[in-house]
Image (tube, rainbow, N blue to C red; front, side, top):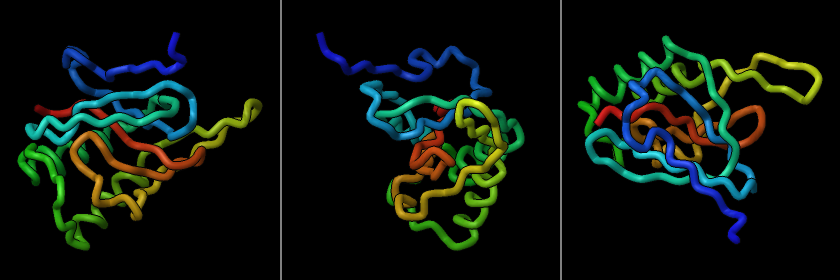
Length: 142
């Protein structure tokens, strides 16, 4: 029996949106799969552990950026302007992430992973979490 497991986030699109998670990359044997990129319908996969996040205002801002400004068509190979990157950075840094060492919790923020900005797309944003690199995911608009 394989020790690898695959979890497709919202496989039938019935969640109705409203969710925001980060998959922190780690050797867990669990691979989260996500459709992303708006109507481009790209498929992503990342190994790690899932952390649910709370950020309704940030989720709205991400929707505005990707669904309205980029028209929900994805941003693969997009040449990000400084203004666009700054806007995305501000949104990502406003997302709340509770870091816990097993005894205490501390409210922290995420950071845009500038070294992987070419991978940024709707519902798939590489980030740095307090627990290491990860991918911020949410309901894809397609």
